[in-house]
Image (tube, rainbow, N blue to C red; front, side, top):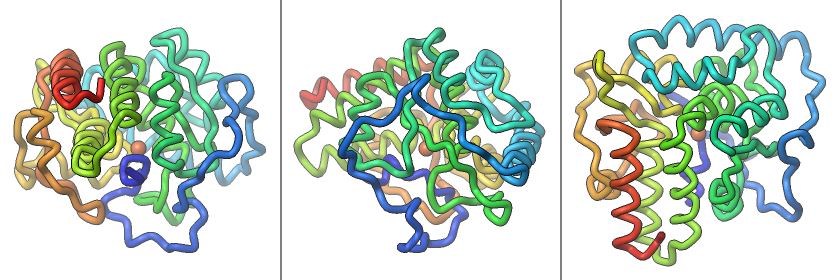
Length: 269
Ligand SMILES: [Fe+2]
């Protein structure tokens, strides 16, 4: 399921097949985890790209991002002016939900990616997009992975759901069910919406790490349906355009419970 490990933004052009960031890595040795992740020697320009992206998104997120995402961002206390160290984020995540971070050189082979999720380890890149790619990247970068993904993994029920998604994917034997899982991943982890007490909010990081999607997703231009795993599994998606429709969960309890039911019915958990 390589799509599930892709983090392309919907407004991005077709990726250049020669871009090494777009070629999934099949691992031959384990990735560095937690304190084994060294802090790269980032240039001032790279640090400034992080600062620009962070400032832009924190401006957009109030009233749009889920309360649970905001809580996660607060708990992780990610640096605003400097790219956070994966080792530091990993330590905070471990304290919150027992998850750790490993450093991936780019897209991972689907089996490798889900193996890490199943062990409560999130593979994150540590390189950042170029300034010319502020609005899109052809592959994940650390703004997408750290700012977009890790705050939700602070939430205990989301953290459990994410691990179970990895476990279910590893147990999946047939192509049709695998496609269904890919779609569930896409419309939850990457593009999920939640009904918070104050209104409809975003928790999917494919939206949260994209300013265009963040501004588009809650508008009337997007059709929204209630979340059921069956419905998500049946919904095709197009990675090159703004996502429509989107699906709304009532709570992360519902997200996990319904997914576990669906997966058990298919002998995936
Ligand atoms: Fe992603």
